Amino acid sequence: MLELDGISKGFVQPGAGRLSVLDNVGFSLERGQTAAVVGQSGSGKTTLLSLIAGLDKPDTGRILLDGEDLVPMDQDRLARYRARKIGIIFQNFHLMPHLTALENISLPLEIGKADHIRERTEEMLDKVGLGPRRHHLPSQLSGGECQRVAIARALVVCPSLLLADEPTGNLDIATGKRIAGLLFDLVRDEDTGLLVVTHNPELAGQCHTQFTLDRGRLVT
Image (tube, rainbow, N blue to C red):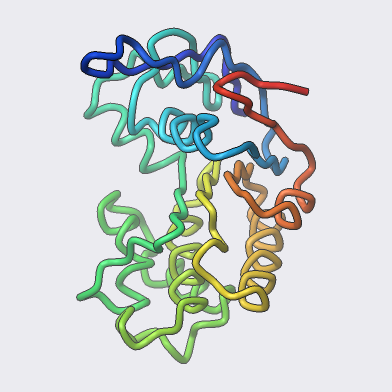
């Protein structure tokens, strides 16, 4: 479902030359499989996630999702493809503050002009246990509830791949464990591949496999 082949990425630093962030990274992930990307700060984890999400392009290599290479796509095609195929969960939730829980979740469906928007949104609200909070704004929700909304929003389009960047990083330990359990349950129910970047060894240990980055290189 996801295949990375020879991914390298670097940046030019004024006065310091070129900094290599990722060096010949490659791995694959099957639909329904869960994987964690771990490593020390600065190892390239967030850059890797941005490349897979299509938010940036590698210097070399291929990123195949459901058999299509994201790297040569122009921005318009990439945006449409990402909207259909990729769900993203951020550490800081990134909810629209003026939209209710229901409206935040339905937003990707509205943008994609999907069918049965209300039904699918209500279904995801119930799955994350926020039916009674559907008309609340993010400012009226707890951190755990905001992350539930973010998870529902990412999964509402039935993506092939779900990307999560430290999804429990801003939550207390008990809430983080509940959110992690919910995330893995939903990924299994929706038959979605999950790639999660985390410093949390307990969260990483719940995944089928782990990929470790060390100074931009994949190590075993």
